[in-house]
Image (cartoon, rainbow, N blue to C red; front, side):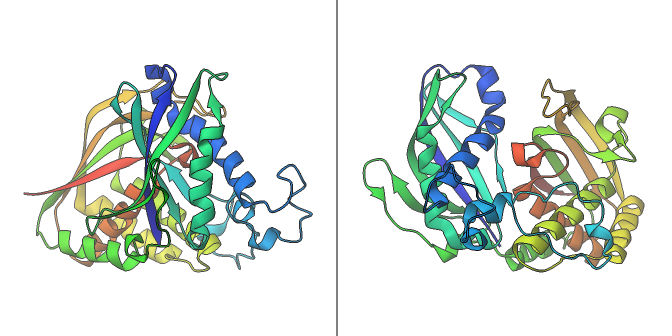
Length: 324
């Protein structure tokens, strides 16, 4: 299960194009700080690892989840770090002094929604670019895009209004229903618009740099990401290695990729560079169960991102399906 929070903020200070371009990178650090201060019943500066309440602390559940035994599962091997169960979307500037963005959260952390809302509001306490920019949170909404529903949780005028809105939660069954509906076309085109800088590797090579993009690259990354997030934050695994290899093989044999308007960005995070934006068109030759499963996976990725540095807002994309 996952939930979208749409946050509207007033910008206090001058927001340059560079600030907007790197907005999600700045937010990642600020959110970690405010979530810790909102979660901690004691001093936020105390040692979290020694705290007796760490097993029920939202901050620890997100940033320091307990490592579990993997029992030799292929998808769980070679883990350098546990993926974060949240992503920030790129900022959309509404006017000169106002912007909005989404925070998407996955898994059991949603049970701590009041603390998450408090942490979002706490972003006002943080400053960016050496104190030259601050944000004033004006509105927080819970949005279910699949059912076209939205619920206001906070406004600057009324304060906190309501919380724990179950209808705003997007379940895996909802995503599967969406995929089933759109996979009924015998032939269709899946358009993937990279909304934020994206980097996907195959055998150590950047597929956008080599311009050798395959749908199986998305399948591989997303199946692993979904399984890891589900394992650590929901206690279950979505895919095993046989399922993933089957989907990868089917996608290579039944889809053709076309690259449009691919551009290299100047984004660099922790020595990782060569992130790209642009559009990829995947033409499906056949429909059926496999196409439905792939659309289900791609829709999940539209919410939670794909590729490298997703915790910093990278790997965000928008989907569009066109019947041919």
